[in-house]
Figure 1 (tube, rainbow, N blue to C red):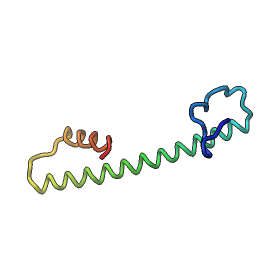
Figure 2 (spheres, helix red, strand yellow; figure 1 turned 90 degrees about the vertical axis):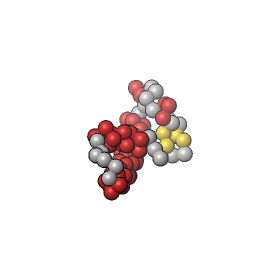
Figure 3 (cartoon, one colour; figure 1 turned 120 degrees about the vertical axis):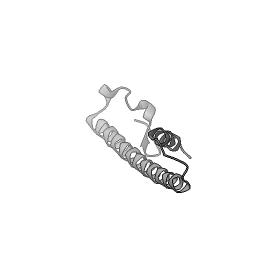
Figure 4 (cartoon, helix red, strand yellow; figure 1 turned 180 degrees about the vertical axis):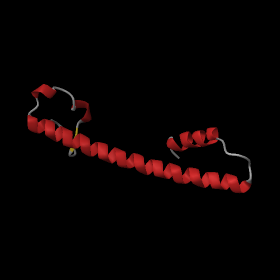
Length: 85
């Protein structure tokens, strides 16, 4: 299997699985698990940042007395923050 700087060539991961040795399949599985762990960690970090920024904005709105913050406001804010700053 072709590797790209120590990583799998993701386009070929599922190609010809039946022709791969058990060792190759284990290597693929290990690489996929590592990649999943990285993505999971990034997701948790992003969710933490979203929660912190959301809490800050809510506090600011409360201090201004601009009115009640609705669930719709929170959902919209979450959507905006999830797309990135």
